[in-house]
Amino acid sequence: MDAILKSFSVGFLLRSVFAGAFFVLTYVEATKNTLAEIHVNAGNIFAVGLVFALVAGVTVYGVHRSVIYPLFEWGLYAEWAKRCRTKPRRRFISKNVIDGLVRRWDDKAGNADAHARMCSRAEQITVWGDYIHLQYTSAWCIILGYLAGRVVGKPSAMPYCWWFNGIAVFFVTAATFSAWRSRSVEEHWKEPSASSEHIT
Image 1: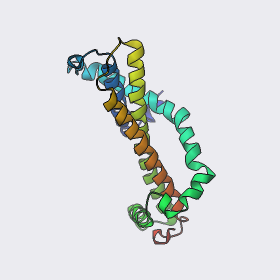
Image 2: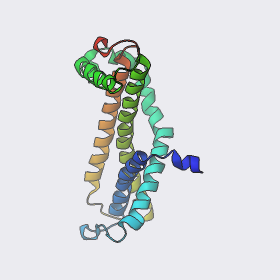
Image 3: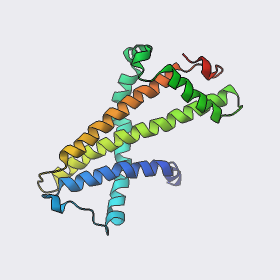
C-alpha cells in the first residue's frame, strides 16, 4: 500500500484536484434549480468538496488513460498521421520552434553526453504530456459531473450548462492540438548523438 501511495506525486495530486473541482462544480450546478441556489458553502469546501474533487480527478484520470486516450493514441500514432506530420505546415509547430525547444531542453542537461540530453528531452515531453492529460481529465470531469448530477440529483434547468460545455469542448480541442504538436516535436528531433541545430 505504501508503494502505491508513493507513486502519487504531489504534482499529480494537485492536477487531480484541479480537474476534479470541475466534477464537483458541474455536479452542484446540475442538482440546483435556480441561480440563487448555486453557491459554494465555505464550511464544506475543504471537508467535502476537496475530497470529492481528489477522488473524482484520480478516478477520471485513470479511466481516461486506460480507456479513452488509447483511441486518441490510435489516431496520433497512425501511419497517415505520421505522414501528415512530415509536412511542415501540418505539424502545427515550426522547425524554428522545435529547434528552440530542443536547444533549451539540451541546455538543461549542460555538458552531459548524448544520452543525458535525450533523457532531458524525454522528461520535458513527459511534463508536456501531463498538462495535455490534465486538460482531457478536466473535460471528462465536467461531462461526468453533469451526468452524475442529473442521475443522482433533482431535475435542474442547468443555467450554466453552456458555459461548462464550452469549457469542456475547449479543453478537448486544446489538448488534442497540443498532443499533435508534442508528437511533431518527438518525431522531428534527431538521434541522441545529433545536435539540436540539425533537427529536421
